[in-house]
Length: 587
Ligand code: ARG
Image (cartoon, rainbow, N blue to C red; front, side, top):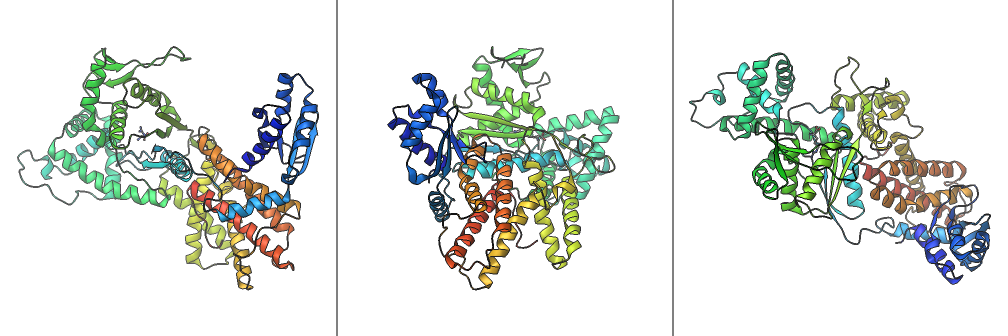
């Protein structure tokens, strides 16, 4: 089904052509003066220069040629605007078509692309903190959005599972439990199947080791040494590593699942290691990598750069691989497995240079095709009310699970103030609402911007918040339930032409759905969906406020109202599903 702006633009194109002007001037956009019109075309002004005419004359000619059925009002306004109001019949017809379509009228991509979304990026054995929240939340939305528009999308968590944290844990473990077989060089048997720690011990070991390494140089060197041995395949350390992975992964999976975040692939930096030697050799063979102060580097600067970009370091002078090495090797692996048309990476915006370097090397070296679309979405920081990176009340790093439980508890307290539901149900509902508050609070900002985590504002049922959107959906659900209880068939009837302004406004808002989704995908900007559902929710609530649905006597009109709010609900539900949260039955 065509987007409503496309339908109108097509009609304008016909009118421009028929009046003797190029159809290129016929583009229609949403009105920026809703008080004057609903849609507008500004092409007559540009056409006037080319055809050496007065813009208002062109606008008038076009208006006279326009099909009258499509519009309730067409007006040429000085200096040359074409102001349009869509006809109520046309709009109602569009609503009925949307309703009948499984994708609410969205036309899926004609040529689906294969897209890898690299997000989450948790570091194994380190606690998941709020810094990882944004990556998971935004990445999940981007993944779902790309999938909704019709692409084949693979989400990969790309764990940091190969770094110094592993050597630190191994060394600390050795100091605490020196009798474990992993530290007995003469041990010949099978290593134990059971890990020597559980998740709470592991969570305590890492910070302890990391603190120790800051003070104690010998300890740090031992940890580095252990990391190198692990990386070169030393069997006992490899065995400990597997335990660390298994224990932490179970915990990470639980955490991500609480966030409603699902990965298709649970790969990590370690999976890319086998590809490193050949990848480096080919960079050397191609004449791209060269020695510089003992390190191996690739130049990536381009004449068009506005500032000087340093070369990408592929191998350090001590032979160690780096973050960039592992990301390049990961691309080699992904090319082998999936040949993606597009890569989307989510990470803190301070990693921008890293990704510029990696993308350029990947292109220069032909690891990806010339036309592979490589995108880095760098996000800003989540700050506290003091404008500084968000911390716990004690000033420590806030753990993600605590943040989630804090927000659910705050919502729970609010629900219990009114006490309309049982405590059990209130707990579940609070989780659902809390997640919407957290995710919407994040996603409603432009990705690259910092934002302030303001819990009380985020959980408010009023204003531009997740709970407000859920409240609107729940409200529609409850009206529909009341209608069903009253014996009405909520699936019956058709949407009739609007009879009030608020009804038409609601239809206009619903009609925008496909346009918003398409824009939000092409700009990889989920905040556009948030903005849209906020406006749509406002339109729903205004319509509801001004319209007696349950007591409407004209049964066809009543059925039409019901169908319309139900369509609005479907649009809202589809949007929040893309954003990665759900609505409760009641709240
Ligand atoms: N683990 C990294 C971090 O915590 C993020 C990984 C981002 N993805 C990537 N392919 N480099 O910052």
